[in-house]
Image (cartoon, rainbow, N blue to C red; front, side):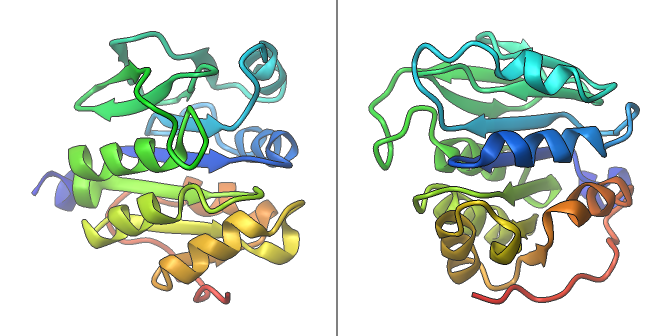
Length: 201
């Protein structure tokens, strides 16, 4: 399978309440030549317009708000636009206005599940701070497909509900303090990854 030689092909990240600080820490500590696209779903209001700018100012990676059929390029950060689901396809993203999932559009679960269905064992899912359970079902799908799950240690989250839900749904995932997630991802070049502590609920 491709992942055996090429390593992982996408990182999908989900965040909700408290996500801006966590996302800024994440992208600030990823190298500019990070070898995968990073797809970010942050719950936000329909009129939210500044997320790309706020992330771009703290990273060497290029940050984009996704357009439909946007190419997914390594070393770039792609943000789901407000009020659209962002789906991962093979080498690009698509947008959808289907009904909200768990009261959210964009939905983290929708993005994660599409990443799992498209890339299987070549996908990484990362669940950060948030106030609901969005992302837990999608992270489970990624891990069940052979991919890698990472969860922010709830003790380091501004709001613990979302990482706690992901930890319960996906006990095989790695749990890491927020400041360790980017270095852990940056160390991944092939299928073999550094050891990681088991998730604690």
